[in-house]
Length: 246
Image (cartoon, rainbow, N blue to C red; front, top):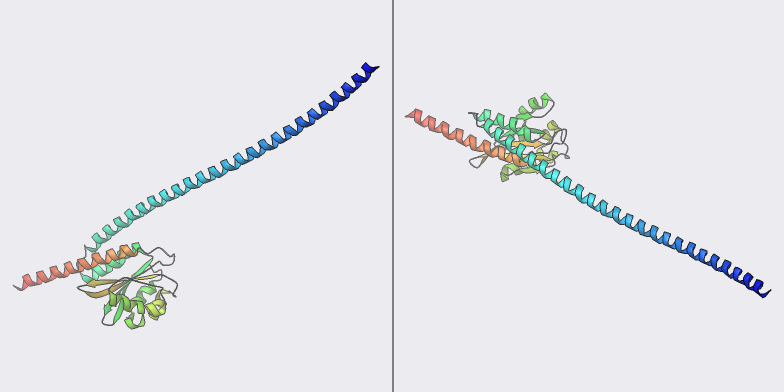
């Protein structure tokens, strides 16, 4: 009888211990699984952030390289266009033809351009390029604008420097603003053409209908080439006249 009781007690103990061990095993497994899952999630997040950072850095580097290559390519194209424009200007032998060629070649570096000849305290419309309506060219040639009617016009002539304007009527005159259809919201460049310290003309340039970027530096180089060639043609003409007079 005692042996039977001991056996029952032992069986009960074994059963209770087995259940306890099983519960401990399950709890341990759950804890390990949770800890492993957290570690996996943490590692996944760290890897995702690392890949995101590396991809961003790679993309930024690729964009910068593309921009640099585009800038170099654009610079080469502008330089080539300037060289060709200079050659075209130097083929002309009269002041009128040189002025026409300046406007023709300046169109490459802007959306629209026009040349005004200075006469006393006013400017006279001469020639335009890039304007879709041919009536604008005709209207320009009939235009005579006192410098006092446009503050930017007067400033460009007085300072002999390139002037940027918003194209408002008070800056480029109501006549020019009206003819060109600008209303104070378009960036306008006015570049003087100078010979022997006197302003001969003003080159007007803007981005046109599609707001093309105006290559103002290229236009300044172009006007400098024009000034130099005007001086050379004038000097050569005087030398020829002097020889003929002997």
